[in-house]
Every structure is written in C-alpha cells, then in structure tokens.
Image (cartoon, rainbow, N blue to C red; front, side, top):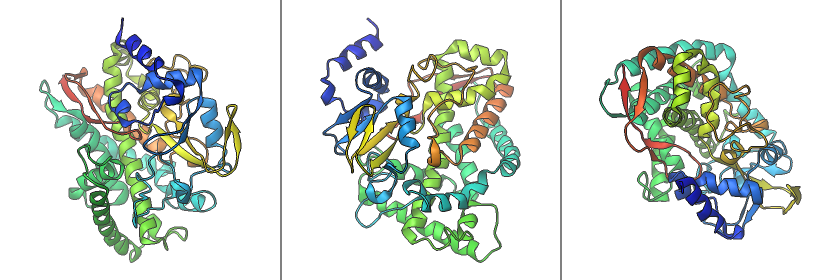
Amino acid sequence: MTTEMLLADEVSAIPLGDLDVSEPALFQRDVIDAYFARLRKEDPVHYCPDSAYGPYWSVTKYKDIMHVETSHQIYSSEAGLGGVVIDSEIIQGAEGDLELPMFIAMDPPKHDDQRKAVSPIVAPGNLALLEGTIRERAGRILDSLPVGEEFNWVDRVSIELTTQMLATLFDFPFEERRKLTRWSDVTTAVPGFGIIDSLEQRKQELLECAACFRGLWDQRTKQEPKADLISMMAHSPATQNMSPNEFLGNIMLLIVGGNDTTRNSISGGVVALNQNPDQYEKLLANPALVTSMVPEIIRWQTPLTHMRRTALDDADLGGKKIKKGDKVVMWYLSGNRDEEAIDRPNEFIIDRERPRQHLSFGFGIHRCVGNRLAEMQLRVLWEEILKRFQKVEIVGEPQRVHSNFIRGFTSLPVRLHA
C-alpha cells in the first residue's frame, strides 16, 4: 500500500465534523492535499466549529471560491471585521495596540483608491524597464553558484533574487536588503517555530521596520515624485495622509506580497521539476515552454494557501447557510486541485493549454497587483537557468514553513549540473 493510500485511509477515518484543515503542521508535513480532497468530495463548504482560530467555514472548490472572491458586497475583507487571514494575528496584526490596516484588508472605495496609488509600479512600461535589471541580477546570482557542490537554493537564489527586486521597488538601501526578508518572515511567522518567540517580539521588530520606512518616507515627501513604491504613496492623495499604523500595514503588505509569493514559487518550481522528471526532460528539449511553465509552477505551488473573508449578512454558499459575521476561508490550494475546474489538477504539466486558470493570485478586486511582475521574475530566472545548467538536482529533503498561510520552504538542498 502506497503512502498516499495510507494517508487517504487515515484522513477518511476522521469524523467529517472534526476535520480541521487549519493546522499548520499539515502544511509543513505536506499532507494537506488528502484533507482537501476529502472536503471537495464530501463537504465542499465545510464548517469547523472549533479550531485554534475559532469557528470557520472552509471553501474548497474552484467555483465556490470564485463566487466568494467576486461577491465583496457580501464577503468583506475589512480588517476591523477580522481581515484576510484565518489567523487574525498575522498580516493585519490584531495584537493589542499594533493593528495594521492595509489596502488588501479594506473594502471599496478606500481599497480601490489605495491600490491605485501603487499600481503604476507594475504598469507594462515599467515592467519592460525592470526586465533588464532582473535578467542582469539573475545572471549574476546564478554565475556565483558552485557547480557540483551542495547548497541551499532558498537562501542563495530564491531569497536573494526577490530581495534584490524588493529593494529596487522600494528604492531601499541595497546593502541592507536582507532586512526586508527578515521583516517579511516576522510578519507571517507563528511564534515558537524558529523565527519569533512571541507576539511581543514581532511587535518590536515591526516597529523597527516602521521607523526605517518612516525615515525613507520623510525623504521622499521632500523630493520630486519618483517611480518607487514609497514615493508613489508619499505623493498620492489616497495614501499621503495615512496614519503611522496604516503606513506600516501597507508597507508590510507590499513586502510580503513582493517577497513570499515569488520566492516560494522559485523554490517550488525546482521541487516540481524534480518530482516530475518527464516534465524536466520536456523543458530541456524545448526551453520555450518556460512561458507556460511559469503559471503552472504558480498554480502547483500556490504560495499563499488561502484568503479569508467575513460575511456581512446571511448568505447561501454551496447549499450551506452562512450567517452574518461568520469567518469564510477560501482555500486557494484546494481550488487549484479541483478536478471539476482544472484538467488533471494533481499533475504538474508544463505545457497546459490554459496555464493561467488558477487561483494563486486571487480574483476580483483583490487580485494580486504584482502578478505580472512575479511571472516575469520566474520566467527570466528559468530562461537564465536553462542557459547555464543541465539540471538543478534536489539532493536532500526540502524543509517547509510551519504555516497555514505561506506555502513555502526554509531550505532546499540542491546540486547544479553544468
């Protein structure tokens, strides 16, 4: 009997009412797919009455997730109602006196106005300008790697490329760029699992982040408008008068959004290709497939596993009665494995006909503002990898993040083949 069969038997033995897919260890052990498969089959809109985060609804099928995403007049993202993550202490920072409003955790019209303030950073013209910078940096990073020796891909490539890009987007001091990685990790970490020990530690580190960015903000307000995120916010009527906490909230949103998603897709692509050697051979035979492989990596990895909403009124969803105030969690990772929406969803296929049919960037008004930038970074990186290496071989067990929100890696031991 295979490991998958044993796991399916283990999951099927749990009473349906006791299934709690919010347990971070299930994601760290990479066994969560079996739990979602059962929910999609038996109870696609599932109520969990008791969890570490209180009662919540799990929405696990593609069409139901799309309905919630596009019904923002019914399902709110508002931070004051709980925000966008199942654990309200993560991201929006509902920890005592450090609440962090951010535009992803707002409803229209304020959401729309603040989002528009930063969207020029990913306008087509700016992306075209950034591509050369990304290619140069990707090449430099790859050329610095040891061929034939084991090293940690997460640290040397995934983190380094995305952190360099973030420093450029913020016009952040380049030599201090690893602070951005640290603040991103601190924002989404579960206390007691290796990054932070307590919520108080998180608060203190985020206040250091706030002080750093406030200094940059003060500089940019006195300068002519420039094409970096801080300058854009400092000179936009929608964001120039933000409170200190709202400023920090939006900074953390942009750091996490620009860091975790791309960095974990960079690592996830290496894992997917190693797990599917036939697809790796297909890529080596036809490097042009990078274009369709990139969105398939993003679907396969689903770097943010979920987003949460709060019901503004009683509603029907998938035949269930949602009550006003209920916590509704859209599990993107499950929707991206839905057989009714995606052909052969449990297979990694780099030449899919419709590779962008996935939920990893969300949908509707909250669709990831930087999705094209993320795709471009992955495309350019893989184009440069294929010019240099025959294979990026995994030579040890990947170590995954302890989180039900970030689906990522802390370590990925690899060896390069010239």
